[in-house]
Image (cartoon, rainbow, N blue to C red; front, top):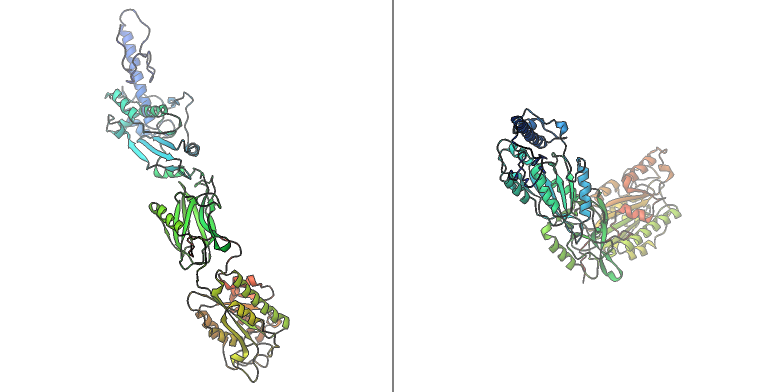
Length: 621
């Protein structure tokens, strides 16, 4: 009786106590025969054994060369040279199939399958099952990445790791082609140590804790399949058998997988809402709702208002939490320190990247500092500690607003001009972030007379002062009959406007001219438009005002003689003056309201709708 077979003579697999090799199917123990085999039987057995060995090696060569589907003919030609019995006898490519380990039909998955499987596996991560190990078996080696549930979204635990087959299985040959051939199950004429390779392959499987996403890019390769078998034995796994050409577990590939993981909680910007008495309540304004993925997220723009404080640097902190909730006490996802103008509305853009990484971007002209990950907790703690219990706006630069109003003309038209000025002053005073910082001036101009030509007589002036005093002065003004039909002393009002005590730094400065007729010319144009007695030209005054940084706005009550079809010198001159305010600076008296005028003045008044305030607020605790 012959001794038990220890290994398969075809593929060298450990096959003790087996009737047939579980690897290649070679019969190890057949029917008993009487006597010794005949020479013909011996020759037949030797030929069958040689053919089986060639088939194993040639099948390994085909697999190692990327067949089926992704074959490299040049590589196949080299690998066939390692086959026992020589490269001439070949297994046809068409005959090669790679069986699924479950015994199903051959399957090749695609990259879409990887994304779908990864998304499902990542979304299943919870506190009890908070780790997923992805393992990719490639022709070069083994790569692994460990994903964690994360507080807000799945993340990566440590870097992607990778080890080559030569490192994992030192018994493999140094030659690249021969090593590839052996990995796929080839034997060749130089006998390997199958037991040593098997033991090294068993030890090559990466450590795992929890479910496994197994990406096999070498399906059917003997030694990698042994590694895959060890991984399957450890617990639940999702397995995909993929073409050998792609790679998933690279830095970019892992980022792409994280980008399809959905947020588990809302992500938003921490802001401060103020209630009665200036009481402060911090809240979260939602930016990205739970369920959003970085791959599908569009940029989001949020309108916020900076508080009226002396400091111009504010904190934009992004945390996880439901909208209008108190901010989570956990660490922030992003903190940006930005130098923004106080007491103004600003728009901030947010982007979502893989791993719940939130990008924060202000306007191009804003200086911003993004706090690195290592400093997020400290910066956020300092910001939270600086939030006051109550908020009181600080004294910040305000505005100087002047109104030059023509008193000559039809009584209803003049009353409408004066009412528009009064409504505008009242609106700014009611809605400005710091109303005490705004000063108002009124320059109400009459007509020149034959006996008094000085500006002080022609213009009734209220110098820059408080809103209440300005409104009281406006109540004393009344319409007057015009003296000249084609000119009014606008130039005298402009001259006095230049001489106002404008604040030169910080404050917003603006002048509104409300009237109908153009200024007097510097040269006499007849009885209806004589020259200015003091020969004051409006052009020089307008230039001086612009040099002072004064915004110019005109509200024109347009007389019929300035219509386009009136092309005489008076009509042309009237149109020319009022058009100097420009398309954006010239408003129509008939349709302009106080809110329109406030917008035209670009006064930084508080928006009527509430906006969240950025932190910190300043003020007192």
